[in-house]
Structure formats: structure tokens, C-alpha cells
Amino acid sequence: MAPAASKLRAEAGLEPLPRRALSQYLRLLRLYPVLTKAATSGILSALGNFLAQLIEKKQKKENCSQKLDVSGPLRYAIYGFFFTGPLGHFFYLLMERWIPSDVPLAGIKRLLLDRLLFAPAFLSLFFLVMNFLEGQDTAAFTAKMKSGFWPALRMNWRVWTPVQFININYIPVQMQV
Image (cartoon, rainbow, N blue to C red; front, side, top):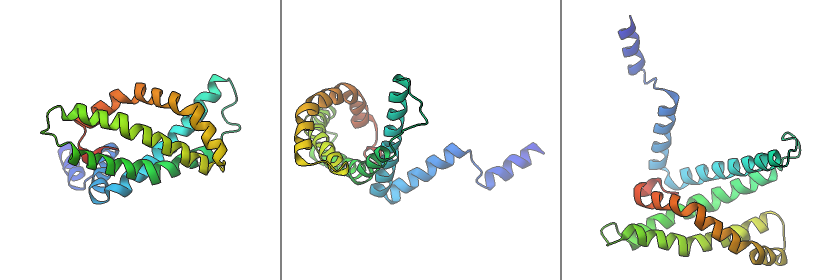
């Protein structure tokens, strides 16, 4: 009886949920790469902000169920959807054309391009868009850039450079964000 049941399950396409979800994601990535990366980035950005708020509240020993800023995850979702996903998609495709895989030290050159050109520009855009979404004026943007840009960029380089090395050198370009 067990072999017939497993054959029926296989024929019906009843795979485990994670495998089906991954299969569906890869299908959407193939059919709608920019929209899929935008949605993924928006969701992950919002989730990241939400988790950061929870961690911060836990470190301050505050009640995590009170005073979570719902506008924070919304701002991050907007930024992820409209900027992170689409810009990342096109930047990595462009980088593939500028520095093809057969160029000597292509991985290192791509990493340097990402870390020294894209990261500072992307961080500046992040500060600008978040300033706008928070309803702040130009003076607030300027102050935030003066006080926060270099510390944020240095932290970005420390944290994301190893991740970007793996991303650029081992992840297929169609999956890079």
C-alpha cells in the first residue's frame, strides 16, 4: 500500500512545501526577474527593520509588544521594492558586461567595483530616500550624511564585503540582489 500511496503523491506533484516554494520562486525569478527581486527585497527589508526594532527593544528591556514603529517596516519595504531589488538587478547585470568572467581577476575587480562605487552611491541614495519618506527636510539630510554616512559605510564594508565576495563569485547573476 505504501508504494502506491507514494506513487500517487509523486504523480499529484505533492512535494514538500519548501521545495514547492523554491520551485515557484525560481519560476517567478525566470519569468519576472525585476518584479520578483523587488518583491523579495521589499519583504526582506521590512522584515529586517521589524526584527531590528524587536532586538533593540529586547536590549533596552522594553516590552516588545508596545510601541513598535509600523512606519519603519513600511519605509523599508518601499525602499527595498523600488530601489534595492531593481537597482541590484540591473547593477549586477551591468557588472557582468563590464567585467566578464574570463577577465583576469574578474571576481576581485567586480568586488572592488561593488564596494568602492556601488556601496557608497547606494548608501547615499538610502539616506536620501529615507529622509524623504520620513518627511525630513534638506537640512536633516545634510546632517544625517555628515554624521552617519562614513560610520555606516565603514560598517557596510566590514559586514557586507565577505557576503558580497560570495555573492559576486559564486551566485548566478540571475539570482543576485
